[in-house]
Image (cartoon, rainbow, N blue to C red; front, side):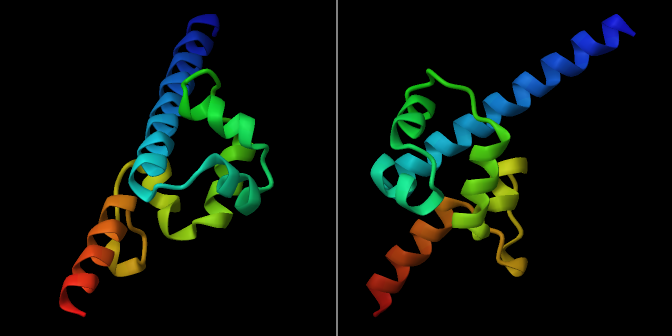
Length: 105
């Protein structure tokens, strides 16, 4: 049983690290500031800065708050995948859509 705990703990840490990397990609792609994230999620901007700077692990409160503020990215955040037909996209898809709509008017 002890070995299973070590394996599941390691998997959990890797999963959380992947979510943190996706949040950093979100910050970079969406050009959202930590101040805006604080306003949208209610989580202190310094905590978002620490996530962005890889000085803090993401926790359940961060994930829940992010998903409430940006429901279109919820599936992507937790899986890295998208389902555009269901409205579940990535920040890159949203950015491309905005850029294309500006080009086509």
